[in-house]
Length: 385
Picture (cartoon, rainbow, N blue to C red):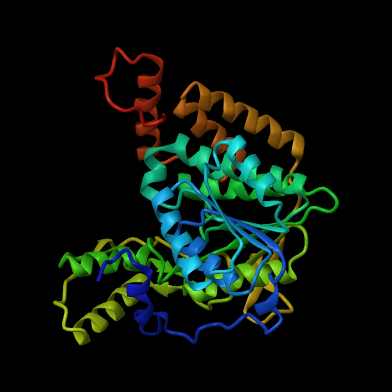
């Protein structure tokens, strides 16, 4: 049972969720994409693939998939065509950090709606590669939003639950990506943001990592005894994206009402009980710190009830386009110079609550030193390439 497989986690969902699964979609929503042209970025990821399989069942006029992971994209293509031989499917191997790739995909697909799910999603990787995180999350969102606006397509941007907390590079780049996506919000263009919590049966995140450690006989790690995480299933994540597209207005932000986020120690204990029933060896749970803090859900008071049950909404203001353009120009200049320290400074200025961690500063300093004076540092692959 590979721990990275979403399928391996589905039987665990009911045991770990500690609540009833939310059912958001009406019969009309199940026919929403019939005859429409749909483009999904990040389609080779677990959520992108699940959304593609959902839409393929609705007989779209065309389904276009964009991702850089060519092998995973081909596997998804074969699966979809096996299940839906008549599906008009267009597979594009491309990188959202390249404006030309996004432009080509958008002009080929001519979509009615774009689901932008591509992006860096690993906290530790983003802390150690701020340039990559900014290129992928921020400029990827910029390229997709601009081309979707020019195409006259609806835009639904998948984001994370931590984008308001902005305590990490990942959270800060996600928040800036949200703002960038809303910048082209001219008349007729309808961008939406969807905050997606930790997906239980996804390919990465808290629960898949715990499952991988459990299967390897290693202790389950929890940052603090008070750390909490909001959990949803893959089916809920897909339904959330679809429902947001159905009911959203320009600059709306949506999230699923999951109630109180779960304590990670409770999640770990539920996983261990399941493991015992399945005949797996029990492993210890290790808490890194007894101080308060850790993962938490979005602040509830920033969202309000929507007409759709279990769906919460927040109206975002359109960002100052001229100020955003200045920030992005500075970031682009710093990226070209491979100046990771300057990129961190620009990110802090763009998302004021964000302050870089010690790890992010130290790695950025080494990366910048290598870029400016490679002879000073022992040759190795640059972190900000």
